View 1 (cartoon, helix red, strand yellow):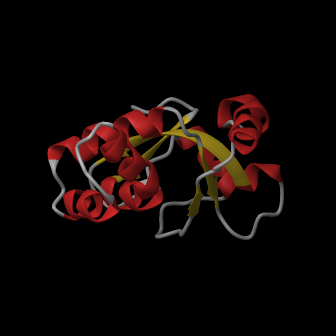
View 2 (cartoon, helix red, strand yellow):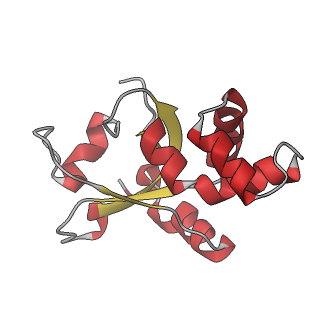
Length: 132
């Protein structure tokens, strides 16, 4: 496995959808877009700067992965996301048992904790390498 226990691979399509508002803010702050419409246009056109900003944003935000039904605390865990190609969420094999994942087309939900308090809670209490 090329992923650490605390990392998950998020496909670009999913990541840009989840972190879109943060990427828009980054484009505007760096004066690469004058307003939300221009920023959304850059995202739609998949300009290279969008992926750079997305990488920066993702470094600072944990994500929560959940596979229903959540019967115990290992059914929802926090991970540090990285961008991957393809359309599948990538996990380290050792965290799969907690999700009861068996790679036969299982669906998982991805959540982004927005507040600093929620992000801190995810890092301290829910990171996969801390609770296994």
